[in-house]
Length: 172
Length: 121
Image (tube, rainbow over all chains, first blue to last red; front, side):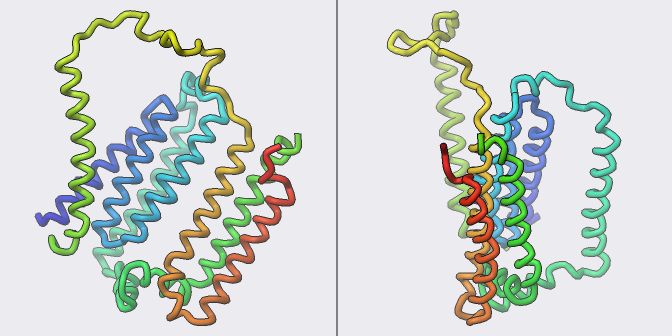
């Protein structure tokens, strides 16, 4: 086992452990803190996979932005009362179904990788342009231009949605 | 393989040292200090003010809108990094792409402004 593999398993294992802590903690703030640690370990995994830009985005956007959004949501609700409520009320069937779908998705990706080895084609293509950030730029703004522009519409929808949801409170 | 991740080894060392500093300090303090807990130690100091209300209150929805807008524009800024790195190679078409992207998000910005989501009062 090489050092790269060793560090991959260490960081992947630690991120799984922290993710498990996120869903098992009763205190929502503790969950959010564990989520930050999970994102940091995932960033380490991205670095090992030579996706430096993704690692930076993981820390800046996810550990910085998304978790602070979650913390504000925790502060919006009555977290004290929520921690007393029994959490699993007939959600097990739905949760199992979603988990099964996710497992199938991940499984199919792993299967495709071992069966046909199509994975990494885009990465090889991107490496022609130089570094990691340049590679993403070269693909995102030429081949995957439409998804990129759709992303802006998605962001716009989220923006308008948040304002509409909070509108009554804002006007008061 | 080892050579390829070596630029990040100092980051790892820093991470381990930072973690070890905290753990070792706490462990040494735990070993050395006497342990005599009593209620007075949990009360505010003489120079402090007694708490008027619980610290964990529900914050106004305004905070949520502000943090969500921050997050969305954060994501927008992230898209600009790879674009800036490839700007010269993408040429004028790359400029048009990013212009469209920003214009679409500008609509959201103007909407937020017009609806008063950026105002505090």
